[in-house]
Image 1: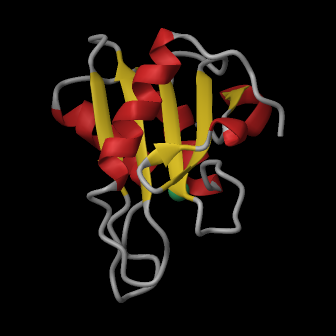
Image 2: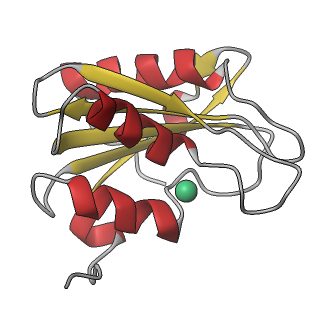
Image 3: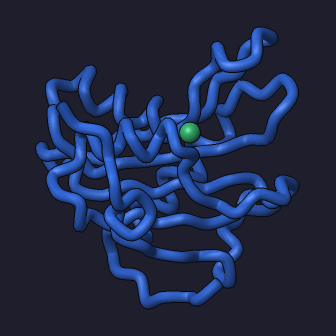
Length: 142
Ligand SMILES: [Zn+2]
C-alpha cells in the first residue's frame, strides 16, 4: 500500500478517528474509528457499535456521518477511517458505508483516508488516501 503525502486535514481526521476508535463497542469484531469534515467545516467522529445480532450494529463511518447530520449537516467533504491492526482486513470502508458516504459526499472526488492503528498510534506505513470515486465508481442513485 502506497504511503501518500497527507495534509493538515488528513492528519486531523486520523487523530479524531483514533480517539473515536477507543470508544468502539465491540462484541465479536474489531475496533474502528472514523471522522468526517462536514459542510460546516467541523470534524465529527464515529465508532463502530456492534450487537449480538449480526448486521444490527453500525460501522464507524456511518456513525460519523450520522453524527454530522445530527448537527445539521447534509454534506461531508472528507472522511477518515482507522481500524485496529488486529484485523487482517484492509483498512477501507465496506460497501454499505461507501454507498452511505456517497449519499452524503460533496462530490465523488472527496478524499477517503484509511489507516490501521496499534497501541493507540496510527501505523504510518498503512496510511492510504483515495478518492471516493476510485473506491466506489458506481453508486446507487435514483
Ligand atoms: Zn461499513
